[in-house]
Image (cartoon, rainbow over all chains, first blue to last red; front, side, top):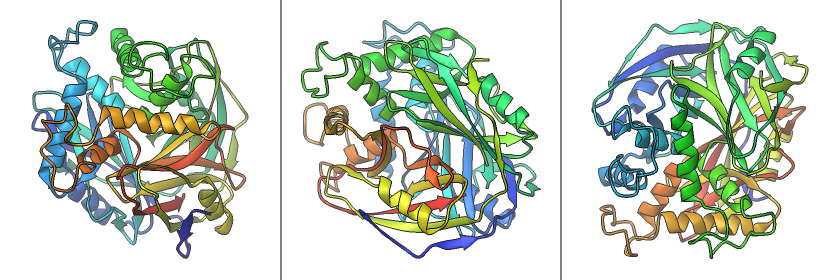
Length: 154
Length: 154
Length: 154
């Protein structure tokens, strides 16, 4: 064996619960939603389980990343914009999907490289995030968008 | 708070159910399986829960992407083939795993960059997909393959 | 329809169970934890369900990859190190987050490109992995780290 294992806690299944979160992004970049997820858990009286956050869009993503130095998120956004630059920049001649603007196909590429959904254990009603983890909506379109996320406690 | 939250719906846990889906890919590219997932939910009488789709292979992926313009999927496949080109093309000299063909190691790289499993909320027996979202098997090998996906309703 | 579907097995919900796994990584590269996950399932008497493995860190990842030829994992590590090289190497001039060492920001980039959590169906108490699939902790920091993973059976 490689891992050391804590004592196992066995729990009768909770109620399921779900709600839709609506988030106004500010255009390209990160919006933290950790407290919104925690609020959902509190309002549905969560005990033990797993929280599924599901994004109903294909040009943004949900990510768990460091919540300390904001330069980490700035560098992440820069990395993805270099990996999938706006249509019209050098190296994008092969892109065919151009009708929805120069930021649309790169947004789909970033969405493929990043999670559409996140599953996070819930322990005693709280997200079992690590100390330095935050939950973020990562908007890939240049302009602000209204994004819908399903929160599902199972 | 960042997000607006809908009313919470609380539901007693459903039965769990699972089945194996077998999909014949057509070689490199996308095969839509949205209707197959919906059929599974219908046949097991799903109410509320979450659908887990799990791919039992390491040279393909499951992705949620735009279901409208097929150029989006064509561009996605092209992006990943440029990021992880076939062994023997320029820039692949460092690759050691060459015994299973020039498309095998790139397939493993693409599989690492893309999801092996998808979790999608189920609301009133239906996948809570966004309007423009479809569920796809993304085959990374050049030749057609038979791929097995576990569908698990929890 | 695209997929052939097996008979559906319906099962009453199991107990939930969770534990924390502690893994000492050996620095950059892969540590297999498949047997640790199987041990968790055995010790909690798992029947049917889904195993969620959740990593509480943002500079490592959990991945499912080929468990046969070790060159596959070696090539994967090399691919990601070329895509996100250490700070100070050519092409990293734009990176701002430099205070935690040259391997830190690349580790966050790799963590964004790879899963923080894995969901795997459990059938008759066993992980429904494919024949060639193994479960790995992929450490992105150069030095050995102690990593914590929540195992949640739902």
